[in-house]
Length: 476
Image (cartoon, one colour):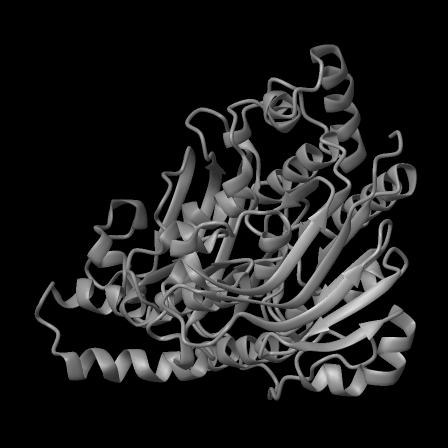
Protein backbone atom coordinates (compact mmCIF):
# COMPACT_ATOMS: atom_id res chain seq x y z
CA UNK A 1 0.00 0.00 0.00
CA UNK A 2 1.32 3.50 -0.80
CA UNK A 3 2.18 5.99 1.98
CA UNK A 4 -0.59 8.14 3.49
CA UNK A 5 -0.43 11.40 5.48
CA UNK A 6 -0.01 10.10 9.04
CA UNK A 7 -2.35 11.67 11.59
CA UNK A 8 -1.55 13.17 14.99
CA UNK A 9 -3.65 13.34 18.16
CA UNK A 10 -3.71 15.88 20.98
CA UNK A 11 -5.76 15.71 24.21
CA UNK A 12 -5.77 18.42 26.88
CA UNK A 13 -7.83 17.78 29.98
CA UNK A 14 -10.22 15.76 27.85
CA UNK A 15 -13.06 13.74 29.29
CA UNK A 16 -16.37 12.17 28.33
CA UNK A 17 -19.38 11.12 30.40
CA UNK A 18 -22.08 9.01 28.80
CA UNK A 19 -25.65 10.27 29.10
CA UNK A 20 -27.33 9.01 32.25
CA UNK A 21 -24.05 8.14 34.00
CA UNK A 22 -22.69 9.76 37.13
CA UNK A 23 -19.12 8.60 36.59
CA UNK A 24 -16.97 9.85 33.73
CA UNK A 25 -15.82 7.21 31.23
CA UNK A 26 -12.55 9.17 30.80
CA UNK A 27 -11.36 12.28 32.61
CA UNK A 28 -8.37 14.65 32.69
CA UNK A 29 -6.66 12.99 29.75
CA UNK A 30 -3.49 14.72 28.58
CA UNK A 31 -1.49 13.12 25.79
CA UNK A 32 0.01 13.67 22.37
CA UNK A 33 0.33 10.97 19.72
CA UNK A 34 2.83 11.84 17.03
CA UNK A 35 2.40 10.90 13.35
CA UNK A 36 3.38 7.30 12.70
CA UNK A 37 3.25 6.09 16.31
CA UNK A 38 1.67 2.70 16.95
CA UNK A 39 -0.10 2.84 20.27
CA UNK A 40 -1.35 -0.18 22.21
CA UNK A 41 -4.15 1.15 24.42
CA UNK A 42 -4.73 -1.01 27.51
CA UNK A 43 -6.87 -0.92 30.61
CA UNK A 44 -9.36 -2.90 32.70
CA UNK A 45 -12.82 -3.61 31.35
CA UNK A 46 -14.85 -0.39 31.48
CA UNK A 47 -11.84 1.94 31.69
CA UNK A 48 -12.95 3.99 28.66
CA UNK A 49 -10.77 2.52 25.91
CA UNK A 50 -13.58 2.16 23.37
CA UNK A 51 -14.93 5.58 24.33
CA UNK A 52 -11.58 7.15 23.47
CA UNK A 53 -11.45 5.35 20.11
CA UNK A 54 -14.97 6.53 19.26
CA UNK A 55 -13.99 10.08 20.12
CA UNK A 56 -10.88 9.88 17.94
CA UNK A 57 -13.06 8.61 15.09
CA UNK A 58 -15.39 11.57 15.49
CA UNK A 59 -18.51 9.58 16.37
CA UNK A 60 -19.07 11.11 19.82
CA UNK A 61 -20.57 14.28 18.38
CA UNK A 62 -24.18 14.11 19.61
CA UNK A 63 -24.60 16.23 22.75
CA UNK A 64 -27.58 14.05 23.72
CA UNK A 65 -25.30 11.00 24.03
CA UNK A 66 -23.03 12.49 26.66
CA UNK A 67 -21.03 15.37 28.11
CA UNK A 68 -17.56 16.43 26.99
CA UNK A 69 -14.86 18.46 28.71
CA UNK A 70 -11.43 19.66 27.66
CA UNK A 71 -10.05 19.45 24.14
CA UNK A 72 -9.42 16.57 21.77
CA UNK A 73 -8.10 17.18 18.27
CA UNK A 74 -7.10 14.89 15.40
CA UNK A 75 -5.06 16.12 12.44
CA UNK A 76 -5.81 13.63 9.66
CA UNK A 77 -8.36 11.07 8.49
CA UNK A 78 -9.37 8.25 10.84
CA UNK A 79 -10.61 4.75 10.08
CA UNK A 80 -12.34 2.81 12.89
CA UNK A 81 -12.91 -0.92 13.29
CA UNK A 82 -15.55 -1.37 15.96
CA UNK A 83 -15.55 -3.92 18.76
CA UNK A 84 -18.76 -5.39 17.32
CA UNK A 85 -18.07 -6.11 13.62
CA UNK A 86 -21.77 -6.95 13.05
CA UNK A 87 -22.60 -3.28 13.43
CA UNK A 88 -20.09 -2.31 10.76
CA UNK A 89 -21.29 -4.48 7.85
CA UNK A 90 -23.51 -2.16 5.81
CA UNK A 91 -23.75 -3.80 2.37
CA UNK A 92 -25.17 -7.13 1.27
CA UNK A 93 -22.04 -8.35 -0.56
CA UNK A 94 -18.45 -8.56 0.64
CA UNK A 95 -16.90 -6.54 -2.19
CA UNK A 96 -19.47 -3.77 -1.93
CA UNK A 97 -18.96 -3.58 1.83
CA UNK A 98 -15.19 -3.09 1.50
CA UNK A 99 -15.78 -0.51 -1.25
CA UNK A 100 -18.35 1.46 0.76
CA UNK A 101 -15.92 3.69 2.66
CA UNK A 102 -13.84 4.41 -0.44
CA UNK A 103 -16.97 5.42 -2.34
CA UNK A 104 -17.90 7.87 0.39
CA UNK A 105 -14.42 9.37 0.17
CA UNK A 106 -14.80 9.90 -3.57
CA UNK A 107 -12.04 7.48 -4.56
CA UNK A 108 -12.15 6.86 -8.36
CA UNK A 109 -13.96 3.65 -9.32
CA UNK A 110 -10.97 1.91 -10.91
CA UNK A 111 -8.85 2.66 -7.86
CA UNK A 112 -11.57 1.34 -5.52
CA UNK A 113 -11.65 -2.02 -7.26
CA UNK A 114 -7.87 -2.27 -7.10
CA UNK A 115 -7.99 -1.62 -3.37
CA UNK A 116 -10.86 -4.00 -2.50
CA UNK A 117 -9.26 -7.36 -3.42
CA UNK A 118 -5.91 -6.20 -2.04
CA UNK A 119 -7.50 -5.36 1.33
CA UNK A 120 -9.35 -8.70 1.47
CA UNK A 121 -6.16 -10.57 0.67
CA UNK A 122 -4.28 -8.62 3.34
CA UNK A 123 -6.68 -9.76 6.10
CA UNK A 124 -7.01 -13.33 4.83
CA UNK A 125 -10.71 -13.25 4.00
CA UNK A 126 -10.76 -15.69 1.11
CA UNK A 127 -14.33 -15.40 -0.16
CA UNK A 128 -15.77 -14.13 -3.44
CA UNK A 129 -16.55 -10.43 -3.80
CA UNK A 130 -20.19 -11.45 -4.32
CA UNK A 131 -20.34 -13.51 -1.11
CA UNK A 132 -23.26 -12.39 1.13
CA UNK A 133 -22.08 -10.57 4.25
CA UNK A 134 -24.98 -12.10 6.19
CA UNK A 135 -23.44 -15.55 5.70
CA UNK A 136 -20.08 -14.66 7.25
CA UNK A 137 -19.17 -15.87 10.73
CA UNK A 138 -18.41 -13.37 13.47
CA UNK A 139 -14.66 -13.81 12.97
CA UNK A 140 -15.00 -13.36 9.22
CA UNK A 141 -16.97 -10.16 9.78
CA UNK A 142 -14.10 -8.89 11.90
CA UNK A 143 -11.76 -9.40 8.96
CA UNK A 144 -14.29 -7.74 6.65
CA UNK A 145 -14.46 -4.64 8.86
CA UNK A 146 -10.66 -4.43 8.96
CA UNK A 147 -10.46 -4.78 5.18
CA UNK A 148 -12.91 -1.89 4.78
CA UNK A 149 -10.81 0.31 7.03
CA UNK A 150 -7.54 -0.58 5.29
CA UNK A 151 -9.04 0.08 1.86
CA UNK A 152 -9.73 3.71 2.87
CA UNK A 153 -6.02 4.16 3.72
CA UNK A 154 -6.61 6.33 6.77
CA UNK A 155 -3.87 8.36 8.41
CA UNK A 156 -5.11 7.15 11.81
CA UNK A 157 -6.14 3.48 12.10
CA UNK A 158 -8.29 2.77 15.17
CA UNK A 159 -8.78 -0.90 16.05
CA UNK A 160 -11.07 -2.01 18.89
CA UNK A 161 -10.30 -5.63 19.85
CA UNK A 162 -9.47 -6.58 16.23
CA UNK A 163 -8.64 -10.22 17.09
CA UNK A 164 -11.27 -10.86 19.79
CA UNK A 165 -13.27 -13.56 17.95
CA UNK A 166 -10.57 -14.95 15.68
CA UNK A 167 -9.08 -18.43 15.72
CA UNK A 168 -5.36 -18.62 16.61
CA UNK A 169 -4.22 -18.66 12.98
CA UNK A 170 -6.52 -15.72 12.25
CA UNK A 171 -5.04 -13.71 15.12
CA UNK A 172 -1.56 -13.99 13.61
CA UNK A 173 -2.84 -13.32 10.10
CA UNK A 174 -4.73 -10.17 11.07
CA UNK A 175 -1.90 -8.87 13.25
CA UNK A 176 0.56 -9.35 10.43
CA UNK A 177 -1.82 -7.69 7.96
CA UNK A 178 -2.08 -4.65 10.23
CA UNK A 179 1.70 -4.56 10.70
CA UNK A 180 2.29 -4.70 6.94
CA UNK A 181 -0.26 -1.98 6.29
CA UNK A 182 1.27 0.32 8.90
CA UNK A 183 4.77 -0.37 7.63
CA UNK A 184 3.89 0.42 4.02
CA UNK A 185 1.62 3.42 4.65
CA UNK A 186 3.30 4.99 7.70
CA UNK A 187 -0.13 5.56 9.26
CA UNK A 188 -0.62 6.23 12.96
CA UNK A 189 -2.44 3.46 14.87
CA UNK A 190 -4.26 3.11 18.19
CA UNK A 191 -5.07 -0.52 19.01
CA UNK A 192 -7.27 -1.63 21.89
CA UNK A 193 -6.61 -5.26 22.73
CA UNK A 194 -6.52 -7.53 25.76
CA UNK A 195 -3.97 -9.87 24.15
CA UNK A 196 -0.92 -7.77 24.98
CA UNK A 197 1.62 -10.34 23.83
CA UNK A 198 0.12 -10.44 20.31
CA UNK A 199 0.91 -6.78 19.61
CA UNK A 200 4.22 -6.28 21.42
CA UNK A 201 6.19 -6.59 18.20
CA UNK A 202 3.96 -4.05 16.43
CA UNK A 203 3.35 -1.34 19.03
CA UNK A 204 5.93 1.37 19.62
CA UNK A 205 4.11 2.88 22.61
CA UNK A 206 1.82 1.65 25.37
CA UNK A 207 -0.86 3.79 27.02
CA UNK A 208 -2.77 2.37 29.98
CA UNK A 209 -6.03 3.74 31.38
CA UNK A 210 -7.12 2.99 34.94
CA UNK A 211 -10.53 1.78 36.03
CA UNK A 212 -11.46 5.42 36.70
CA UNK A 213 -10.66 6.41 33.11
CA UNK A 214 -7.50 8.34 34.03
CA UNK A 215 -4.04 7.81 32.59
CA UNK A 216 -2.23 5.05 34.49
CA UNK A 217 0.95 4.51 32.44
CA UNK A 218 2.55 5.72 29.20
CA UNK A 219 5.80 4.83 27.48
CA UNK A 220 7.65 2.27 25.39
CA UNK A 221 5.99 -1.16 25.82
CA UNK A 222 9.02 -2.91 27.32
CA UNK A 223 9.63 -0.04 29.74
CA UNK A 224 5.99 0.13 30.89
CA UNK A 225 5.78 -3.62 31.45
CA UNK A 226 9.12 -3.76 33.29
CA UNK A 227 8.30 -0.76 35.47
CA UNK A 228 4.57 -1.24 36.06
CA UNK A 229 3.88 -4.89 35.18
CA UNK A 230 2.83 -6.11 38.62
CA UNK A 231 0.68 -3.03 39.32
CA UNK A 232 -0.97 -3.25 35.91
CA UNK A 233 -1.74 -6.93 36.42
CA UNK A 234 -3.29 -6.13 39.79
CA UNK A 235 -5.51 -3.59 38.03
CA UNK A 236 -6.72 -6.22 35.55
CA UNK A 237 -4.42 -5.61 32.57
CA UNK A 238 -3.28 -8.77 30.80
CA UNK A 239 0.48 -8.65 31.38
CA UNK A 240 2.73 -11.43 30.05
CA UNK A 241 4.13 -13.38 32.97
CA UNK A 242 1.32 -12.25 35.30
CA UNK A 243 -1.52 -14.49 34.09
CA UNK A 244 -4.56 -14.83 36.37
CA UNK A 245 -4.99 -17.98 38.43
CA UNK A 246 -8.66 -18.74 39.13
CA UNK A 247 -9.29 -20.58 42.38
CA UNK A 248 -10.67 -23.91 41.20
CA UNK A 249 -10.85 -27.42 42.62
CA UNK A 250 -10.39 -30.48 40.38
CA UNK A 251 -13.35 -30.80 38.00
CA UNK A 252 -16.29 -32.95 39.15
CA UNK A 253 -17.18 -36.25 37.54
CA UNK A 254 -19.82 -35.67 34.82
CA UNK A 255 -23.34 -36.85 35.59
CA UNK A 256 -26.13 -38.09 33.31
CA UNK A 257 -26.32 -36.88 29.71
CA UNK A 258 -28.60 -33.86 29.28
CA UNK A 259 -28.40 -33.05 25.57
CA UNK A 260 -27.40 -35.09 22.53
CA UNK A 261 -27.04 -34.56 18.78
CA UNK A 262 -27.44 -37.47 16.38
CA UNK A 263 -26.16 -37.30 12.77
CA UNK A 264 -26.85 -33.57 12.95
CA UNK A 265 -26.58 -31.16 10.00
CA UNK A 266 -26.75 -27.43 10.70
CA UNK A 267 -27.34 -24.34 8.57
CA UNK A 268 -27.72 -20.68 9.49
CA UNK A 269 -29.39 -20.00 6.11
CA UNK A 270 -31.95 -22.64 4.98
CA UNK A 271 -30.58 -25.19 2.52
CA UNK A 272 -26.97 -23.99 2.97
CA UNK A 273 -25.50 -26.65 5.24
CA UNK A 274 -22.28 -25.64 7.01
CA UNK A 275 -21.69 -28.90 8.95
CA UNK A 276 -23.20 -32.37 8.79
CA UNK A 277 -22.83 -35.80 10.37
CA UNK A 278 -22.30 -34.37 13.87
CA UNK A 279 -22.70 -36.58 16.95
CA UNK A 280 -22.09 -35.19 20.41
CA UNK A 281 -23.39 -35.29 23.96
CA UNK A 282 -23.32 -32.85 26.88
CA UNK A 283 -23.50 -34.19 30.42
CA UNK A 284 -24.50 -32.69 33.71
CA UNK A 285 -21.54 -31.05 35.46
CA UNK A 286 -19.18 -30.85 32.47
CA UNK A 287 -17.80 -28.13 30.23
CA UNK A 288 -17.83 -29.01 26.52
CA UNK A 289 -15.90 -26.65 24.23
CA UNK A 290 -16.76 -26.27 20.55
CA UNK A 291 -13.53 -25.27 18.83
CA UNK A 292 -12.37 -24.74 15.27
CA UNK A 293 -11.45 -22.06 12.73
CA UNK A 294 -13.68 -19.09 11.89
CA UNK A 295 -16.48 -20.03 9.53
CA UNK A 296 -16.50 -23.72 10.53
CA UNK A 297 -20.04 -23.57 11.92
CA UNK A 298 -19.42 -23.31 15.66
CA UNK A 299 -21.99 -20.59 16.37
CA UNK A 300 -24.56 -22.23 14.07
CA UNK A 301 -24.10 -25.50 15.93
CA UNK A 302 -24.59 -23.80 19.31
CA UNK A 303 -27.79 -22.07 18.14
CA UNK A 304 -29.13 -25.38 16.83
CA UNK A 305 -28.32 -27.21 20.06
CA UNK A 306 -30.03 -24.38 21.95
CA UNK A 307 -33.33 -24.89 20.14
CA UNK A 308 -33.06 -21.61 18.23
CA UNK A 309 -32.31 -22.99 14.73
CA UNK A 310 -33.95 -26.09 13.25
CA UNK A 311 -31.70 -29.02 12.37
CA UNK A 312 -31.32 -29.44 8.62
CA UNK A 313 -30.92 -33.18 9.18
CA UNK A 314 -30.58 -35.44 12.19
CA UNK A 315 -31.88 -34.58 15.64
CA UNK A 316 -31.14 -32.68 18.82
CA UNK A 317 -32.63 -34.51 21.80
CA UNK A 318 -33.08 -33.52 25.43
CA UNK A 319 -32.98 -36.17 28.12
CA UNK A 320 -36.25 -36.79 29.99
CA UNK A 321 -34.66 -35.12 33.03
CA UNK A 322 -33.90 -31.96 31.02
CA UNK A 323 -37.13 -31.96 28.99
CA UNK A 324 -39.34 -32.35 32.06
CA UNK A 325 -42.49 -33.01 30.04
CA UNK A 326 -41.77 -30.45 27.31
CA UNK A 327 -40.99 -33.12 24.72
CA UNK A 328 -37.63 -34.49 23.53
CA UNK A 329 -36.83 -31.94 20.76
CA UNK A 330 -35.84 -28.43 21.91
CA UNK A 331 -36.69 -26.86 18.53
CA UNK A 332 -40.36 -27.62 19.30
CA UNK A 333 -40.30 -25.96 22.71
CA UNK A 334 -41.94 -22.62 23.41
CA UNK A 335 -39.73 -19.77 24.60
CA UNK A 336 -41.02 -20.25 28.14
CA UNK A 337 -40.00 -23.92 27.94
CA UNK A 338 -36.49 -22.94 26.85
CA UNK A 339 -35.83 -20.43 29.64
CA UNK A 340 -35.34 -22.86 32.57
CA UNK A 341 -33.74 -25.55 30.38
CA UNK A 342 -31.44 -24.04 27.73
CA UNK A 343 -29.81 -20.64 28.31
CA UNK A 344 -28.12 -19.27 25.16
CA UNK A 345 -25.60 -16.42 25.00
CA UNK A 346 -25.07 -15.08 21.47
CA UNK A 347 -21.74 -14.10 19.98
CA UNK A 348 -22.93 -10.47 19.73
CA UNK A 349 -24.33 -9.47 23.17
CA UNK A 350 -26.37 -6.61 21.72
CA UNK A 351 -28.56 -9.08 19.83
CA UNK A 352 -30.28 -10.20 23.03
CA UNK A 353 -30.73 -6.96 24.98
CA UNK A 354 -34.34 -5.87 25.45
CA UNK A 355 -34.48 -3.47 28.42
CA UNK A 356 -33.26 0.07 29.08
CA UNK A 357 -31.27 -0.63 32.26
CA UNK A 358 -28.86 -3.36 33.29
CA UNK A 359 -31.08 -4.26 36.25
CA UNK A 360 -34.19 -4.62 34.10
CA UNK A 361 -32.25 -6.63 31.52
CA UNK A 362 -31.41 -9.24 34.14
CA UNK A 363 -35.06 -9.30 35.21
CA UNK A 364 -36.49 -9.95 31.72
CA UNK A 365 -36.07 -13.74 31.85
CA UNK A 366 -37.37 -14.35 35.39
CA UNK A 367 -40.41 -12.16 34.73
CA UNK A 368 -41.16 -13.91 31.43
CA UNK A 369 -40.73 -17.31 33.06
CA UNK A 370 -43.24 -16.57 35.77
CA UNK A 371 -45.65 -14.50 33.69
CA UNK A 372 -45.61 -10.75 33.13
CA UNK A 373 -46.50 -8.78 36.21
CA UNK A 374 -46.71 -11.82 38.52
CA UNK A 375 -43.23 -11.64 40.04
CA UNK A 376 -43.01 -9.31 43.07
CA UNK A 377 -40.22 -6.73 43.14
CA UNK A 378 -38.64 -8.45 46.14
CA UNK A 379 -38.45 -11.74 44.24
CA UNK A 380 -36.88 -9.99 41.24
CA UNK A 381 -34.31 -8.32 43.48
CA UNK A 382 -33.46 -11.67 45.10
CA UNK A 383 -32.44 -12.96 41.66
CA UNK A 384 -30.94 -9.82 40.13
CA UNK A 385 -28.93 -8.27 42.97
CA UNK A 386 -26.63 -11.27 43.54
CA UNK A 387 -26.01 -11.48 39.78
CA UNK A 388 -25.08 -7.80 39.62
CA UNK A 389 -22.49 -8.40 42.34
CA UNK A 390 -21.11 -11.63 40.85
CA UNK A 391 -20.72 -10.02 37.43
CA UNK A 392 -19.15 -6.78 38.69
CA UNK A 393 -22.06 -4.72 37.35
CA UNK A 394 -23.66 -3.41 40.56
CA UNK A 395 -22.40 0.14 39.97
CA UNK A 396 -23.96 0.06 36.49
CA UNK A 397 -27.36 -1.30 37.49
CA UNK A 398 -29.19 1.78 36.19
CA UNK A 399 -27.07 2.24 33.03
CA UNK A 400 -28.42 1.46 29.57
CA UNK A 401 -26.98 -1.86 28.31
CA UNK A 402 -25.86 -0.29 25.03
CA UNK A 403 -23.63 2.22 26.87
CA UNK A 404 -21.56 -0.54 28.51
CA UNK A 405 -18.10 -1.52 27.36
CA UNK A 406 -17.74 -4.67 25.27
CA UNK A 407 -16.56 -6.72 28.24
CA UNK A 408 -19.38 -5.44 30.43
CA UNK A 409 -21.93 -6.28 27.73
CA UNK A 410 -20.56 -9.81 27.57
CA UNK A 411 -20.88 -10.28 31.32
CA UNK A 412 -24.42 -8.91 31.23
CA UNK A 413 -25.37 -11.33 28.46
CA UNK A 414 -24.03 -14.24 30.53
CA UNK A 415 -26.04 -12.91 33.45
CA UNK A 416 -29.29 -12.86 31.45
CA UNK A 417 -28.84 -16.59 30.80
CA UNK A 418 -28.01 -17.35 34.43
CA UNK A 419 -31.04 -15.40 35.68
CA UNK A 420 -33.47 -18.19 34.76
CA UNK A 421 -31.23 -20.94 36.21
CA UNK A 422 -31.22 -23.17 33.10
CA UNK A 423 -29.92 -26.73 33.32
CA UNK A 424 -27.74 -26.17 30.22
CA UNK A 425 -25.75 -23.05 29.33
CA UNK A 426 -24.74 -22.51 25.68
CA UNK A 427 -22.20 -19.69 25.55
CA UNK A 428 -20.68 -18.20 22.40
CA UNK A 429 -17.27 -16.65 23.17
CA UNK A 430 -18.09 -16.14 26.87
CA UNK A 431 -14.77 -14.50 27.79
CA UNK A 432 -14.22 -11.99 24.98
CA UNK A 433 -13.49 -8.41 26.05
CA UNK A 434 -12.54 -9.35 29.61
CA UNK A 435 -9.62 -8.02 31.59
CA UNK A 436 -7.67 -10.55 33.63
CA UNK A 437 -9.71 -10.00 36.80
CA UNK A 438 -13.15 -10.24 35.18
CA UNK A 439 -11.92 -13.22 33.14
CA UNK A 440 -10.95 -15.07 36.31
CA UNK A 441 -14.28 -14.16 37.93
CA UNK A 442 -16.19 -15.54 34.91
CA UNK A 443 -14.18 -18.77 34.98
CA UNK A 444 -14.92 -19.20 38.69
CA UNK A 445 -18.60 -18.41 38.12
CA UNK A 446 -18.97 -21.01 35.35
CA UNK A 447 -17.07 -23.56 37.41
CA UNK A 448 -19.60 -23.01 40.21
CA UNK A 449 -22.46 -23.49 37.74
CA UNK A 450 -21.18 -26.87 36.57
CA UNK A 451 -20.67 -27.94 40.20
CA UNK A 452 -24.34 -27.11 40.73
CA UNK A 453 -25.22 -29.73 38.11
CA UNK A 454 -25.48 -27.63 34.98
CA UNK A 455 -24.03 -28.60 31.63
CA UNK A 456 -21.90 -25.87 30.03
CA UNK A 457 -21.24 -25.73 26.29
CA UNK A 458 -18.89 -22.98 25.16
CA UNK A 459 -17.91 -21.87 21.66
CA UNK A 460 -14.46 -20.39 22.19
CA UNK A 461 -10.95 -19.71 20.92
CA UNK A 462 -9.76 -18.96 24.47
CA UNK A 463 -7.14 -21.60 25.30
CA UNK A 464 -6.68 -20.27 28.84
CA UNK A 465 -10.41 -20.73 29.45
CA UNK A 466 -10.32 -24.32 28.18
CA UNK A 467 -7.32 -25.25 30.29
CA UNK A 468 -8.64 -23.61 33.45
CA UNK A 469 -11.92 -25.53 33.29
CA UNK A 470 -10.41 -28.78 31.94
CA UNK A 471 -12.97 -28.60 29.14
CA UNK A 472 -13.68 -31.53 26.86
CA UNK A 473 -13.20 -30.45 23.26
CA UNK A 474 -15.38 -31.03 20.21
CA UNK A 475 -13.35 -29.75 17.28
CA UNK A 476 -14.88 -28.67 13.97
